[in-house]
Length: 161
Image (cartoon, rainbow, N blue to C red; front, side):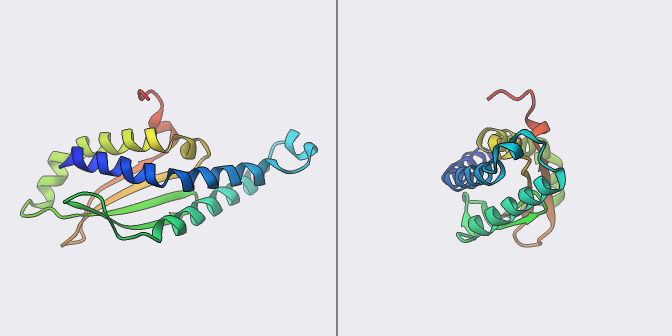
């Protein structure tokens, strides 16, 4: 189940990587397309943060247009929102007869590794640009939180690419 989730999640991210690339190029042109004097100065952190927030907002809106999206037999991507400069993906898992507590206890470490590896491989440029990612997994029936993974560029340091 989790290998299928990982593979399907990676396919989903790769399908949307063109949108991410376009936004990053636009971000680069907007941020660095000013006059030469501005390029040699440090860009104000407050303005940079505003741009990151806006990029996350635009990306969330664009990616949300195709939702809900079935990832695999157990998982559906139901929502993508932005919170400041973080993209928050919410997945609903059909857990069948398994209890939430059992899933949380037995599968947390494996899921965390799979999600972080997948995001670090597919969204490295986005993370480098300061756009973080949060993956939330909830039970599709009970709506109980099963997993939450907050991924920043620092999570990817030391991982094999």
